[in-house]
Image (cartoon, rainbow, N blue to C red):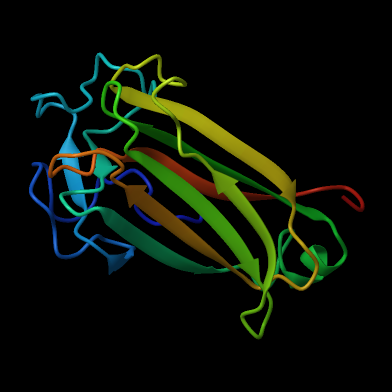
Length: 192
């Protein structure tokens, strides 16, 4: 089960290139994101551009500010096969994934990080995906899948998911894009 709420940009306001004031499931830390419809056109990714095979109708964009951040704090399960006892015994793995991209040959991009924290909020592990460069996209508009997986560190009780969009070139649009953001936990048979 994906622990990220609205990792596919399908819920809440949006659909155009206009920035939104709220994003369902996320806290806007900085800037003004946009949730853009794949059908919008105008140079934005379309259903025909590289991206998730099973994509919804929208994706995240950095909007029109040089740096935009979205944050989501997730409390890890307290009980069950992926609960605290299993985490502390080294029997839980996580997988994080996202489709990240940008516009044509521009280097605007999106970066996703997942920071695991203990009960005091102290970071105990970090995974970072992206940004995807223009060269990695073949100088095409679109999104490329990035993933990482490892053991959830003993003592982890929460995960902070941070999505950062950065405009590196000129213009007014922050053409960092993201879709299909996920964080899943899996129980393993023994120590990881």
